[in-house]
Length: 608
Image 1: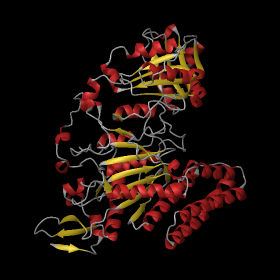
Image 2 (image 1 turned 120 degrees about the vertical axis):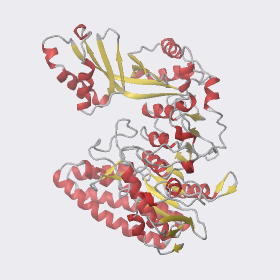
Image 3 (image 1 turned 180 degrees about the vertical axis):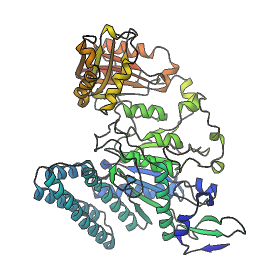
Image 4 (image 1 turned 135 degrees about the vertical axis):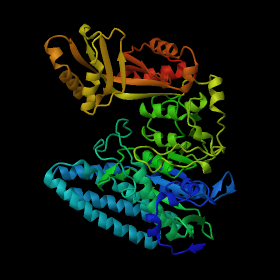
């Protein structure tokens, strides 16, 4: 056995995947760890948690505490922190780009200088070392020079290519990661930062542009296999350089050599600060995971490093039963299943990005949503699947010990990786969760939350001649898909006389035109009477896995709306029965949410 201190990482990079022991490949995933370490834990901080230097210090201290203490005991937990840009930074960068687009290059460059000064001011306020401050300043000057050239090109073109917008707006996360890393280093913590512009790959040809904050239709497909390989290569360089791990290289008489990773003599918990939001394509073109996409970054990373848990630090006490601004009686939900959280996120609950849950579901990573300003509150725990409760899972690997389960899918393209069974341990001892099966059997709170999509329009296709005609729905929704228009919900009467779907307000006219084009012949021959758009509507949804086990939930919901004097324009319920959605006039949205919230005993005050 030869212990290699200055072992060539190039040889490690070039080794075949089969040469790495299975248990090592599992333990730490793409960021390999010796068995002596605990599992990775991932934290994510949004812009509201990083508004100024004081909050950077607060979040940094939270990370140090989480890595070194657990339930009052001293621990040593490998930690990754995904950071968003400082509060308002992305909007400032968008304003800079728009200023250049309008022909005011001088004004754009001046605004860029002010923004860079703000970054430097936050770093100074964090009390980072002189060496770190000098490096951040040097990086900012280089970035300012590069971005000024981009702004000059935008001014000449008088338009903003999507790539240019994503390149500029992604700098906020890059600067934020450097600042947090420098603060942790000042506190004596061995931190490094990882630039996802070189390690997180997404497919070409997805949705372009930044999208809207929290939008559910910004489809970005991460390339998990390629990302895992890039992160693994980056980690081998860093971990060996920092002395976090050592390598045992075992020469065999025949066949390939074996490589074992062991903890360094002085075991130190690794700390990696990760840039949220930003990514790259296989061809090296800078891109993003779209607005509010840092949650997605965090769950992708948690999946690939087989994390024990992920904590989303927000400015609220978890996920609420409804938006407190619309429903004053709303309160934090103690626990949710993955599917419930996805439904709430898709229908407007802005605490989580709609795409963010998928990687955690596949890897069975518990998600904790907590308040950075109220750390004493346990927040919301998202864990467990209805398939586990109902016995619907057919994946026998879930019964295996995690050390015996190979992540054979992690390096494959086109998936979120293997479904990693978690060890039989509690990651939320401070939250009295109870079993999900028991919770459903008790019939407590069949509806977990009320959520909404505020700005919705209905597109209605109707005529008696459509009854029994095959392919009508295919043509209608094919036309919408060709225009990249996402459909929120679909309603069709059994007579097939009419079909309507809900789309975002901003897509209403494009959707109407697409459907009219698809049925142009029928409209000309009066076989279709009209394609109608109804605007100024909202969709309100009741979400809860317990609805499947409870009689009368739809009746109670619609009775509550009727009692409050609210007319329903359209309704839909999925086959899973965990979501019932009604479309109402936008002016009555708040009243509708309060009525439903009260009807399911989520609040004590009835609405009439």
